[in-house]
Length: 476
Ligand SMILES: Cc1ncc(COP(=O)(O)O)c(C=O)c1O
Image (cartoon, rainbow, N blue to C red; front, side, top):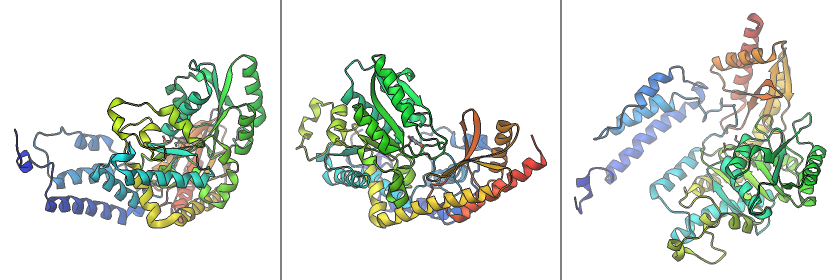
């Protein structure tokens, strides 16, 4: 059917009035939810089958009414999940979802600007460039540094390993060895695998009593591999491990990398944004000597999921590792100071992530984020102090940043702590998670959501006290 009247095709293009209605009704739903978010349960997924059945209804030929669609979203998704946007979410690594970022994302999605190449939307690309420039300044990188916004920390770690591999290893790279602590995030293993290495190419170096890599053990492992004709090429340090928030000795790692002509990558996906605080800056001393750094704005900048970042000290390396030209893009090459992000990233067509980072920073200024992050460090210290007061609790890792690892002392450690966690979650006052260290189940509180304040951490401590009482009443 040929037409100049799109309305005759139906409704993909709403009129101005319908557009307003879509926005108004969506905004009503969100404002209603967020006005009362502090009273929402920490998690509400007691009857998943009911929600799956409602959401899983087949998509119809004719479509449904907006009210009906919004009601499905509200009832079955917004209200019935682990509340990862709420302050009581203190599991894994929280994020948040600053509302202004969602507005930025809405504009980006609606206007559908193309940020793979500079010439198609120069100012939109400049927004991402300026965010990257700000981040490079914060970590102490110089002019030639470059970076990309990614979908998250995993993809940033992936591109970092690709860049290190392309920079330092021959075409047949399977003699290359990667060194990291036994506490590194699993995404480093996944990235190594996706970039063509096997787990045999990775050395998990032991850690000290505070879960930081032991530099002496690292040096010994490097020497041993060299003697066997292997090529040590990459050290991955952590600026905040997921398990306990441990920060590796970054400056020492940088010296070892330099002495052995290796690449140093710092996975700062969890901890990185604490560099905005004085305490974080001290802990991350030497980070500017790293060849590359993963940051995750969807964690420490409290932005919506889908916002990661990789910075590379020598930006040309990032480009060399990722650039693949194409004849049909020949109109879109520009001078060197105009960045085509697709040359630096695995993606060609890319989400306009810059706007969701830039808008909240512009609106609230860096100081707001700094204050919120400082508050998280204080809250973690406070939680640790309160935990120590509870009889039976043992602190496994005191906070280096904003994670506290602990457990309930018992002869049957794993069974008891599994039950302990179940009891805590059953209160619905908080949502925390567990991990395993040296085959022992450990509980952890991770404080990073911008909506987590004293009230929400107090709720966690209250839930832990209730759960301890239950363990005393019904021991395992
Ligand atoms: C230290 C660390 N590195 C990497 C990642 C992976 O990041 P993402 O989940 O954004 O892919 C995480 C996620 O929690 C993390 O904590």
